[in-house]
View: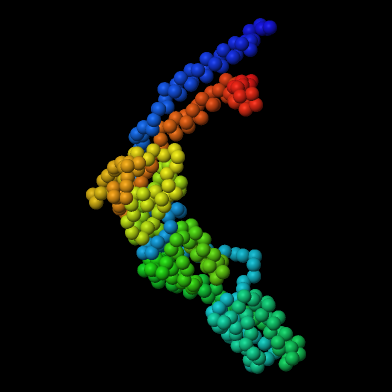
Length: 346
């Protein structure tokens, strides 16, 4: 029974099927019966090191030039200062002045003291060294009164500041990745840069410097790319920037990017190159007809763009529009596997 203006179940079913038939008709007109050529504009061509260059994805290669910016930020810390190599200490015996010494910490972290063997002080605080000296001299002196004062400290930081201040670029240093893939930086061991991204290299450099100078912060910038670089984007497994040892073909570039997806349109793959005068030149290639003989070499900086097929685009449109519209009207359409028939739920 229909009460008032409330539509009956039959009116609701008729309304649902009217909407469904209309949308399915539109969907049928939209989906082609075969794969068609899709004219799709690729994203803006990525140039070399510019604000648009994805340096966070690029893997560094031999010959690339990287800039390191050093920034020292002296700050108050609650942690006691720990003695380092090249720091200078005043060791004073208050009642035996003939034993007083000013000593500098050697590269092995030790200092020489009168009448006793060398002791290790690197990594310790001045107070810890004082207690150690009192223990050592307790067999020669009764209740030895010893004072340990830091005369010169932060020697590594001072040395680093002098190094970067006298460098040609001031607090910046340009470094070229060597053929062995490593780079050299002040005060830390050589480290491998080839194969790392800029963020990965930044984290590793700051980790090494933090062990020597907690107040040092290093920023890493990619300045120049010397290796062969190509870009692959669109419907591929792993879009991104790829460095190669030499020129590669279109099919090899797609293989580096994980191959094409099922949603790809392989007949209109776009290759964009940059001419010597700065203009961008583009051409399409059909992968379904490409052979080893017709495959061609890419140039440095080329962009290979694989568009999405018309069917894939239609499927996305249906998923984003028809399904949402059906849910908006309060209906959902499902298939009952138990009875093998379509069921409508409200």
